[in-house]
Image (cartoon, rainbow, N blue to C red; front, side):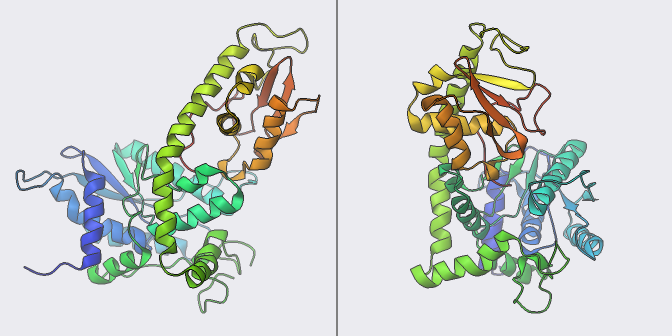
Length: 393
């Protein structure tokens, strides 16, 4: 029996767990960019799709495995890269393999090019999954990506939630490779005879030929912050603190996630109680209101007394969740914004409205905290109260 490359074995084991629970003929899609991580994932899925649930007691069953390739159209030659990735997926036996080039949203976004491209990408994944009836979409993020995510969250001051990094599961999405290093996915490609594409924006400006050049993706010199963390920050940490920094950061994410999920659930309960209490008695007469709380059109009201009685840590977590529910991006909602909201509750001295990320606003009146949604919110000014799953991706 031929010896299986250790990296290939590790990739297949990780994918096996991600496919568990799928029934015969269920469809799973691999999100493939043509890079090493996603091509290694495609190869492992192609192998494991025909043996889901296999054990010494069962022959297992097959699931259908396909792929979705998103061409952002942000770099010269992106169509050729996407076509090549699709061709490689088909050669591995994946079917269907769909290539999508989503339309860029009209206008400009304060989120920046990386976040805009991410939103387009995930929107395309969800659209294709809905069209094809796919049960799961597998993403190729690795342990290295997780370590970078934790560092970015810490640098932004995004709170304890940032330590939880990217979730292994979120809705239809799965990240089976969060326990594998990037070097392992490259080894899988080498062992499988797969040539992979290297995104030039992942290279530092001084990384030699092919480095991205200066105004935007593929345009000269544009180097995403994540790439700088990868190429500069993590190597310095490894050199200074010794090897194992990336693994330690990834372990921290795993350990923090359960705690963060529980605290977010408690914060959501607090927020729901504060919202319900704000509706119990009509507010004082004043501006034209849309409900008993005294909220104006586009606002959501929270009872200040309910919030003030909560533990400060839970209250502040609930206030951050309220900002997210009003349409503020998690990566942009910092401690400074939470401090401003908390001051309305515990340090009220008649201060005026506070601005929040994305154009959202908060004010206090008649014992209530009112939040007006960012332009991305719903028509009633509230995107819904649910614990955030991640600061990115």
